[in-house]
Length: 559
Image (cartoon, rainbow, N blue to C red; front, side, top):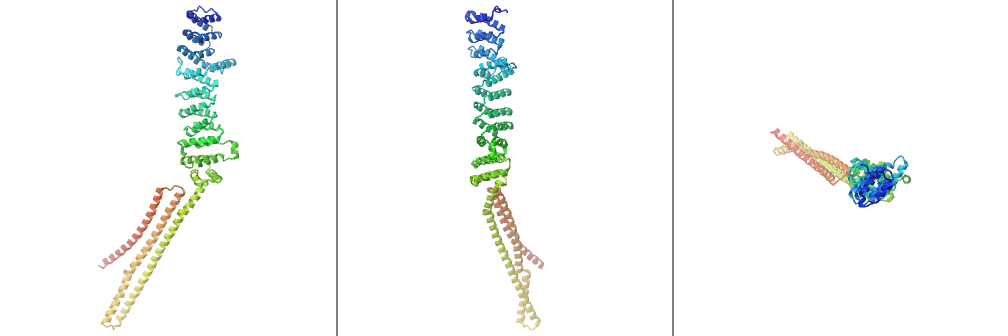
């Protein structure tokens, strides 16, 4: 439908817009449409004034569309004012227009024409943080597709970063931790926050590291923290290095920490993070931690063991915490290039330098391991073992040996005496037998003499038979059995005791002894004693049973 005002000039149309009465509403509407149809830059101020100053909401509503039709970028300052319009429809239309203008404005910043770039930069400076916050935080922009909305929000993010006002940091941080944030948006937010490197971003980055599952995005957040010169940023990075399960994130945290120059501050914070974590030595990835803690080359040039010595000092302060002792030992070893003997040398050097009591270092020595670290402990353990165990055991064995030797010597003496007595009895028997036999052969014996000689003959013969078949010989056989059994029992007992004592010595030096093991070793000693006693008793019974068996055999034969 033709507009009867189409032939008027811009100035004439502007004059019509300036007459703001109830009777001229229709005329002003036609003037706005006519100005939009001209599509020249001169109409922007007239349409902008109509949008921001006209009392009629219908006029303000169509002014938004007219500005979009002519040049939405040039209309940005007026659209920004219209966001606060009392009419919700006008405000929504202005928000939509700004949203569509933002991507074009950001794109114009990289335009090949320097003039266009400059104009876009000037327009960008007219935007306010509340305006961009409104666009960024609006959950759904009417009439825009999901892809268009993402582009608008990324543009608002970029604009906030380019403004250089630190008041934008909390807004960007809040947007960063929104759930289900798309990847491109997160990258835009991190890039925008990098423009500031402001400590205000630290709490948001920490929460992002804790809650976001994307390792690559968390790596970006860690790198951003590395650019923020604030102690709290170091604290967050140390926790990430210790607690994060994803290797990519730990490597990013390590690289970020290396950019912070104060290595002692990092060491203190890392040790605190380790104490507060549930990390164990077996699961700790300690190599990135050592790389992150590396002192500057200028300090290492003066003392190449600077980090190792510092970690040893901190570990001694934690000597009462077994878990941390193990972790610190791993860090100390890794700081010594993984060489246990070198770590042990530095530990010995620390003891000499500080005159630290050995008990404070023992647990650390065991955790570090290696011959150098364990040498003082092994020496002390060997001295204790020799004083309180090996020497007493040796004395006990010597006394036991002496007692057994005395017993065997007495048994042999008894054996010799018994054998001598048996021999004498046998000789007496031979003498009596021969003497009486000669009397019989003489033939001169009277009845009484014959009876006496007969008694001597029978008695002598009986003594010889008793000596050969029973009595002393039985005792001699028993003595031989007892001596042999005693020797065998003693050899077995001493051998078992030596085995048990050597086992105890090994476990003691390895610090693997426990009350249960002590009880088990004691039970073995008790069993050895019991077996020896049973062996001696069984030998005695065997001798007695053998004698009875022989007696029964003879009886059966005689029968």
